[in-house]
Structures are given as structure tokens and as C-alpha cells.
Image (cartoon, rainbow, N blue to C red; front, side, top):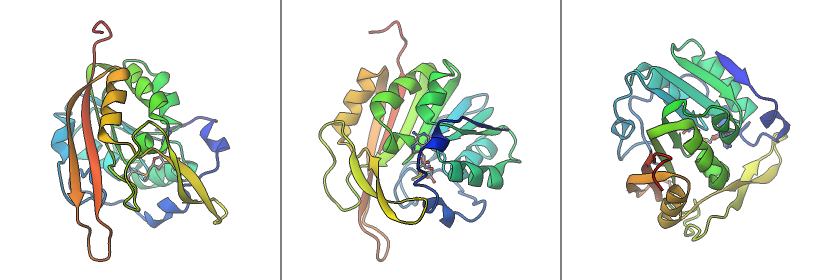
Length: 238
Ligand SMILES: C[S@@+](CC[C@H](N)C(=O)[O-])C[C@H]1O[C@@H](n2cnc3c(N)ncnc32)[C@H](O)[C@@H]1O
């Protein structure tokens, strides 16, 4: 099943060319949370998903969401992406996968409209990197049941090697516009302490966090990813 909202289609789709390199279904084998998708923690961060409803926030071409539905046996996986190009790509690759639905919407908008519907939400350099966490985290808190888990990976520093922000503010990073011309889009690259404060402010208890350092493959830059796991606090606990 797929569903589409009207709002994201109005936004310039900076993911049209990025996702074009994803040219078919891809067996991911296990979940990776790191930049080069080759080391660090894996599936265990999501816990036992049997009988659970799970959402991926910024699912891109849908590779990880298809893996979560087929191999981790979640009861229902909702792969949300605001890019029309990425949404259409993921539907084309994985529409036949049982228990996996694709939603074309801004993640915060979708989550706000589905209170207490999720057991687990996760993001792999997805919506939490590219939209304001001060809107997305409260929306995730609305959609997750108390005790539900949020897991996400995000850049621990800029791709240039520059240090992360010490406050919750985005930077303009290079992007390709739909017509192929150079442009920019916003990315939130934040220090770990900024993320932990944001999680606390928006109703989450940190379970654990990790930084995965990769020296980089041949010709690739060293990259570090921060991985956070947090539990939706009961609304009755201040
Ligand atoms: C770098 S890609 C990562 C995709 C996927 N997680 C992966 O690892 O292949 C980021 C994705 O997040 C999506 N995205 C960015 N902001 C979003 C938002 N506010 N709501 C939903 N999706 C969003 C983009 O459209 C893009 O497909």
C-alpha cells in the first residue's frame, strides 16, 4: 500500500539525483547505522520486532525498511519519505513486500497525525538529519507509545571534517536541484550533547549512544556517525 500527501510535492526535490544511484532492490544483510554501512551495531538496537509496528523516518529507496519487514519480522513497517522521487523508487523496488507500507509525506506531519501508533521509530541519516529536530522529535513522541523506542544515526561531524554545531541549528550543504543545477539544502549536524538535551526536552529518556568511527575506505574520507537509542517517556513522568 502507498499513500501520498500533497505538501511534500510542493517542495523542490533535492533527492531526485541522489537516489538515482539506487538502481534496484538491494539485500542489506543486516542493518548498519554508520556512514559507509559496514561496521558498528546492527539489528539488535531495534530489539525484538515480532508483533511490533515500526516506522522508518526518511526511508529513501526503502532498502532498510524492506529488510526490517522481511528479516526482522516486524508486524507492520511504515516507510516514510518526503521526496517524491525516493518514494516512487522505494515503491517500485519493494511494493510487493508483505507488511511494508510506503508513505509519501513529511515525517513530522505523518507522525503528528498518528498518535500512539508506533512501537519503534528509526532513522539512518534520514529525516532527523534533514528536518528540524525541534519539530520532528515532538512528533515522534506523539506517535510512539510510552516505552516505545527511537533509534537514529546522524553525522558526528560535517562531511568536510568540520566539527558539529554546539546549538540546534542547521547548515546549508551542497545539493543538486531537480534540474541538475547546484543548490543547497539544510542539514542538522549536532554535537552529541545537543542531541541528548533535545531528546530529554521532547519526552525521551536516553538508553545509550555510541559513536562509530570509520577511517574510511580507499579514497574515502574518515567519517564518524553518532547513534542514539532513546525510550519514549510516559507522559505522566515529568
Ligand atoms: C540520505 S537519505 C537516507 C535514506 C535511507 N535511510 C538510507 O540510508 O538509504 C535521506 C532521506 O531522508 C528523506 N527526508 C529528509 N527529510 C525528510 C522529512 N522531513 N520527512 C521524511 N523524509 C525526509 C529524504 O527524502 C531522503 O530520502
